[in-house]
Image (cartoon, rainbow, N blue to C red; front, side, top):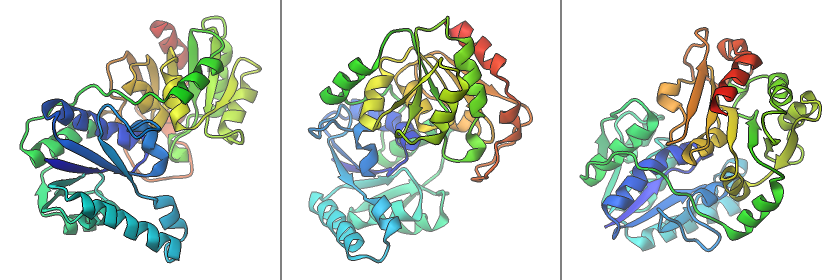
Length: 335
């Protein structure tokens, strides 16, 4: 069998799809399992040589280009090339684990005899492109993904532990980046403002734990990351910013001993790699979107939070109620 997974992004979503795919790999080691993904998230699936522990091959969906220049010649070439490559592979089954109009179209472009997806996809128009509409089962998105893939393939699947690729260059970089351990990582970022815990409280956590950990780093997407810079400033020298790309973050996370962050990709990366963590939740429901993995976890969510996935521009009221001392106490228990 040749299976194509469509889960273009983002980091947390790719990581939440992986346990179901890992279970399929274990159940059917001889099957070809390929994946369509945004180029940015490739290091979650394969190394620089294109080899991964779960996925045979990745195909690139240049969605950033498509969104930036939707009617350009470059976008048209990119889409047609993806279509050509997918059709050449002659997949037996496509499973859309994203459920958007875009992912539905990508799955349909492969020309497979079967295209499966949720009967209630995130964007209803996506279902137009499915030949099989599968009932959503499970509470957590990881459970839902495994159930979807299991029903699509006819194999009973339970989410499996995820093994991520190792990139030698990134591993060497991480060895140099880590000064001492135990290492605490703080991650103030999130997909939208409503999920971002105040930066000054991250700074307070860094200050108050400086004698309990040997090093404290703030994850940053670049040297110009404003949120990370604010945390470093609020820490009074207790934390340092460490910009890294995705491959470097995967390598660095293997050396992190404690993690604090909101509902974001790095949180889910920490969980996948069994890093003990404190997760800060507000509008998103941890029962559905919480960190998934074998490590120790403390999930904090204030009763004032109400579940909503709207991308609002103000911090969730319940998330704002979580004080730094509560996080520090939770960290102390993990230590």
